[in-house]
Length: 124
Image (cartoon, rainbow, N blue to C red):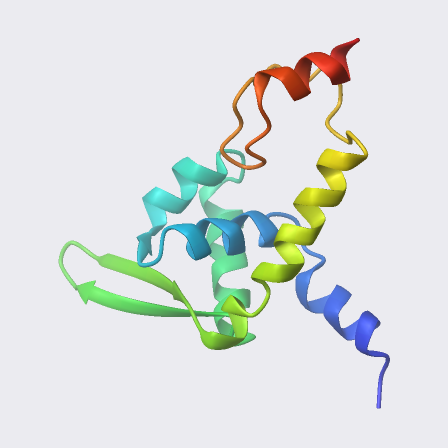
């Protein structure tokens, strides 16, 4: 039996996974385009790959709502929803230790919800 931490890292250590989890936790039943807009940076190909991987691992459920044109929604499974505590802990740790780079131009990031005041502290 492998190390639990190693297995979790393999499962969740891929780029964009935590942002997708956070978005689906706060906005259940999101479409691909809604996720793309919220997460902002991944290409369509990378987001598609990540969503398929997360579905394969049982973290989210993909439901086809319409075939032509294709309309799909994503929803966290119970297994995926249980990761919200970990996502919150990581956000809290990041805010406490001010891990946002001073070069970050955002003042109210959807991903981290940091306030203008926090950004100013980081930039000093």
